[in-house]
Image (tube, rainbow, N blue to C red; front, side, top):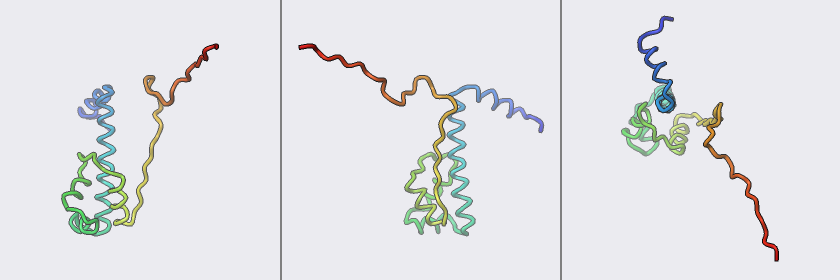
Length: 116
């Protein structure tokens, strides 16, 4: 497959770690929005009909289906999943490299007792 100018541009931008992190987060939000939309459409429901089932507004469903929205709460995703006969699966994966400045536990301390 021939690489486009955009492919080369994106490859260059992904070298910037801050950009790469934002790009990855945007991809995660995009995936959630696509899944919600796909499940709703497979159920044959409009956004308004799903909103009525969830006792919320059509605007809230629209937000959930927006790739730009990153405020998905686990409780709302569970409600959506239940209404669409689906389940929520959250996966937390370790990073391949642990940042040196991250602290997973406290360093052990040396305690000295005073002699009487």
